[in-house]
Image (cartoon, rainbow over all chains, first blue to last red):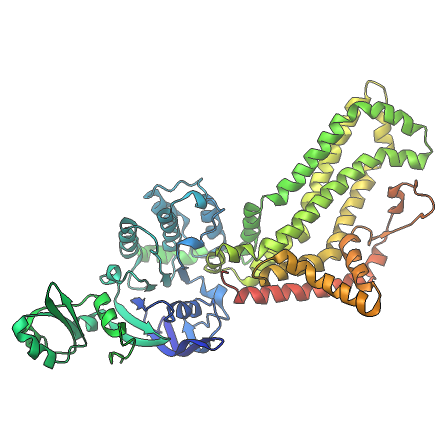
Length: 290
Length: 307
């Protein structure tokens, strides 16, 4: 069974179409990075998956309809919306008590263990914690739940580099195993490149690109072209070109590596570069959708 | 490591009672809203302070009271105890109103609704755990705090009256057990009578995007105004006032003595009348409306996200 399965998932706000009937399938054990510009429909998609918004079309998360069965679904699904949703009046100890009280799959000892590695005091109120500490606390709570799906919507927004790095490190080292699924959205695409197993670009409510990272690496290549080979390189129809230190960097989709190696230095592009190439000026007409 | 904990999970999860989320959600309300117990306690403190600093005149007042005929005598002795109860009840009522107005609005304003909704707690449980605060927890707390306050007042009065040998008169003449029973019964009838008010406030707090107080009050005033302008009648506003203030009287035989203003208040509420209360259509209509408002609030919370 797929962890998330959507067919014709559609959502409109008045006359604005947030999701244009997308089809989506996320298998168990994957880490999906959902990337898109502001207003692309990412959050709407996540909200539908989490049972926070009504939708048209078909959507099953762990076999349940999220809109009708949010409370049961939340036994197996955790989410961090962004760092600012923890109630500011609450004490850390109360947060632990409460989650332990209402969540049948919460392992309090585990959460205490994660917190012991931080400087968060049990008696502090959440409003007294720094932004990074709130994120650490929320992550500690979430990682102590034996959930099957974790949804992270801009989890590291506003955190400094150190916290962001730590955040993904502990997620991978202390939490992720092959039986769990993670869906993450972020604008800091470079920091999830080595974390995710699958990549999805979404724009104007449509899925623009959908591939596994293995496919991503074999399909896309970025070449720093030697000036004398530029014409030959252009002939191979790069999907994007940019200049860096006076040299042309071309991005190719599905072009034989052997051929490219002859033109200059070949490397796997950053997600950000591909994002710009596909979404950049042509906004979704990049021909890269499957 | 992980497989090990996975194997243990079913055993650990077995004793998880379905009522647990509700219990913890109510506790959560008390953590967040300390005014639920602090405000009545402060009111009790003020009452005791007032009673304490005027205690030195008590022997004199008691001597005067003892010269009165028996009904007024009792009333005079009872008066401070009733006043204490009323002040604490009134405080709790106000706390309940403002609590309800914020209950489903505050969580949207501070975005914490996303945190609450990330946990396996249904909207039904969440809304009911909030509704139970004004409808059961506040009345219960009021009862206990009033009882404790009155008991301390009794002790103070006994201590003050002891030297003059009048201490026994309080214990003889103050019908404390009857007062307590009346209080308990009155609290129960009040809550049932006022249920639509709390439910309405909860509904407004789950719906309004701002100015919950205005949304809660203005529609009713508007209807009253329209009625007055269109038909020159005041049924609606009188119904509202009765709903708002009549809670304690609804369950008792109320005897009005319009000509003799000196007749003690307590005597007007001497008789418990549960039959009259339970057979009043106003009670049942109110409860049905309250249930409707609550169901609407539960439904609405599902659609609601942060503001």
